[in-house]
Length: 284
Ligand code: AMP
Image (cartoon, rainbow, N blue to C red; front, side, top):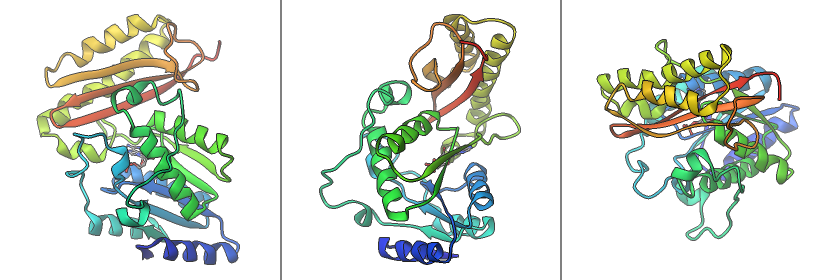
C-alpha cells in the first residue's frame, strides 16, 4: 500500500495502474475509519482491480461553529485499517494541496440541497460537491463508493455526476449498524455511554416508521408524530428534523407512496447524528 501526500503522486500511481489494464475504485472519506468505511473498501476491492481511498477533513463542508477543529484525525490507525482492508493507495492531501489560498470555483447542486440537512447546514453540500468534483478530477476513478448513511449526499453526488457528465459510476453501499441498530459514525465517539444508549432510539424510530408503513399507514404526519414521540423519550435528544421525502427529488411527501426516504437528524450532547431508511411501497 502506498501513501500519497501529493496530487502528482496519486495521479501517477493511478496512471500506472490504468496502463496495466486495471479498473480504479475510489472511496472518499474524512478518516477516523470504522466498519462503515470498511464496507465501502470491501465493495471497492470486490468490484475494482485498484482501490484508492482519500482521507481529507474538508474544511469547506463544515459550517462555522461545527466540529472541524475537533474532528478526529487518527491517521496511523486509519492507515492500518486501509492496509488490512486491501486499499492500494491512500491519498492524504493537505488543505494547501486541495485549495488555493482563495478558492473561486464552486460546484453547487440546486434544489436537492435546499431540503433535509441542507436547510440546517447552509453551504455544507457546496463544500461536499466541490471537494468530490476535485477528488474525482484528481483520482479519475471508474467507480466511486458512498454510504447510504448520508442519503442526501448520495442523491446530490449522483446528480452532480449526471449533470456534469463526469465519466464514473457511483455505487451506494448499505448503512452499517451496531448490533443495537445505531448507525456507525465517526461522530459517535463524541458521545458518553448514556448518550450512545439514547442514540439507539434514532433507528428505533425509523423501524417504527417501517412497521407503520408495512401495516398500512400512509399518512406522513401521523408517522412523523409517532417517531417524534419515540425520540422524545430521552431528554438528551434534540430533534433537528424528521422528514419523509421522495427518494429522488427529496421533496416532502404527505403520503408514503413509491420510493420514499425517511430521514432523521438529531443533536445529542456534542454530536449531530443522522440516519435514514429507504422504503418502497411498490406503487405510485
Ligand atoms: P465520512 O468519512 O463521514 O465523510 O464518510 C465517508 C463515506 O463513508 C461516506 O460515503 C459515508 O456515507 C460512508 N459511511 C459513513 N458511515 C457509514 C455507515 N455507517 N455505513 C455505510 N457507510 C458509511
